[in-house]
Amino acid sequence: MNFISSLMFLGLSLAAVKISVVGSLRCHVCSTGNPGQEDCGALNPGNTKYLENCTAPSDKSCRIQEQWVDFEVLKQKHEMRTIRQCASTPYDPERACYYRTGFGGRISICNCIEDGCNGAAVGEAPLLMSTFVITLIIHFWYLKNFPKHI
Image (cartoon, rainbow, N blue to C red; front, top):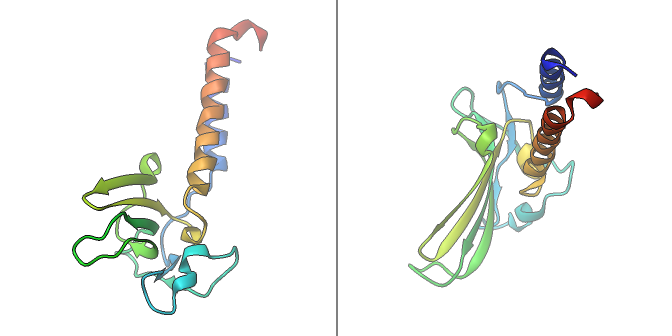
């Protein structure tokens, strides 16, 4: 495979990744910290109970946060909360998920841009993207090290 073929492969691979434009994005909006929304932490696929239209153009992505209060501090009890919401943060595929820690707690945040995408458990989308990136790395490594075998 030559350089042009490699570029075509990369272009087709990227085209296969569905990128949707945020117009009237629909996200799950709930929090296990709200009374009556305790089931927000484990939404089943296809569950539309908390699915809401976001406000365009200010809401640019969906977000799921998992917050842990590791010990009682500032009148916060030890617990884990799941918060799903519309977010004004633009989606960054290179940093779809990130993790923060601070005094007394930590938080995991993932953003996505497909309708209802924040209904899945944290980690499913990054796993798919990681698999895709690793496949591309292996492909280009193989091309570099074994160019005459292709």
